[in-house]
Length: 180
Image 1 (cartoon, helix red, strand yellow):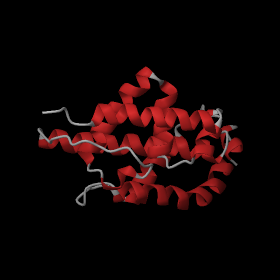
Image 2: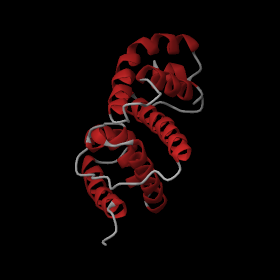
Image 3: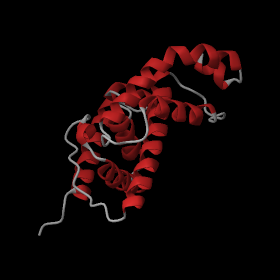
């Protein structure tokens, strides 16, 4: 159905949405558990905003389920980062805290301003090594497995593992507080 949708068949999108909505909702709920308790965005609204971004992706040639959910995760990340930026700019002066990156689910307790620090560091990492940046995005934000990440990026799981380890170490160094 993803390939049919890419080929411009609107009926494929209508058949696809009920099949992927539950998984998108689960992913969004996972993201929202990481956000501050007073966050104004609900999981269903996050799914709908992300889906609107996905629908606008007319030139994408979907390679499969993992690719679709990887792009969906990227869209959700951007939406949440935009909300966090808006919240931080409203407060002006929100402090940044270090973010540990020793597990894929590390963002479980990450407040919005930590998400901004991570996003900024991830942007710098991507400028240095695009593949490592994409791996972090897919694994950390998308929750993809090593194999799914390898499939999306069309590289070996061993390469994903090596780059994931290097990227975590680099991000840890970037996000740790300076020695006082």
